[in-house]
Length: 160
Length: 253
Image 1 (tube, rainbow over the protein chains, first blue to last red):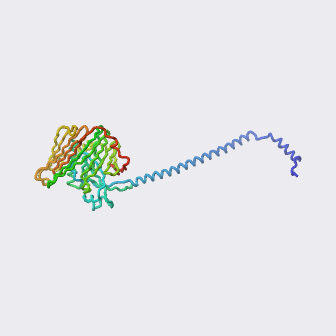
Image 2 (cartoon, one colour):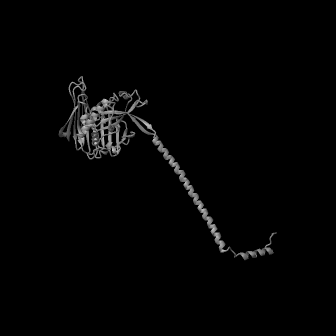
Image 3 (spheres, each protein chain N blue to C red):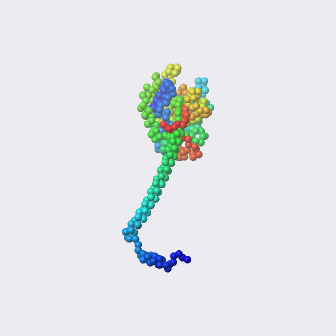
């Protein structure tokens, strides 16, 4: 048995009230206020989302830029760390140093280490303390191809 | 004349310095990989020969003739294929070494290829160093005292103009400088004369014939022949692609 009888006096009274209030609504003032409130909340939500996206973009830029800068400065440091420098002796005369020449060029050669002895540099070890059998020599030659002078070279890494 | 005077003065200065102190080199020479004059608009190629003659005390005659090849293009690039001599103090078993040098004032580099090694040494030539030899020597000359005062005491020197004549097919102007070492300076019982004769083709700005005579060290003659004014192939001034380029740190400082 249905606890509420549709034909009961109470049911009929409630239906009558419903039908009577069917055409009733909120007043225009309340409707306007409600719409304004709803739109306001929607704007706040969009603004919040926009700010979140902007913050994320800024964060990405900051982090990415920092990584790039760190890499750039590290590469630069490596370049300067391994810059090669050279230490050379003065030019020392060779047998044809007395033959005049109007032009000259330097040619770098590898020569036997014992060449240092010929110029009194071997035993002192002032040119190169390494054990290689050859040393570098810059030979100054004239336009005639005759060697005029020589200087010995030691390459060394230099930290800047 | 200016070039010759300056060159002689420079070497005379070098002799004086070397005689009185540990070996030194004027700064302009110490720091430069090339003093090559830059001549644009006068291309040519030529065969070169260097002849060394020396008579030893016991009568032994020494004569060496070494060929070379020389190219210059319109941009002033120079390629030399030559044999470097006088290296025995560095390696008694090897007095000579085949060397190719390319001076490229356009690219700003001096390349050197030694022997059969498939690599090219590269030295940078800063633009402000790309001055002509004339300018460099004129500056040097201006810095030096008068020539007579840099010659050792008692030495005498005179210059002669030998006129103009054809040398190996080109018009050349000759000049001779004679330096006299008086008797007794180096234990000599009579004066020693050292002569330098230079024949220069002014239009090519090339010394086509150079003779150096010194009784103490022998004669050296350098000359160019078969001179052609045809533009040389551009490939001659490029490093072969298969060659490794090795930068000489610092280059010309």
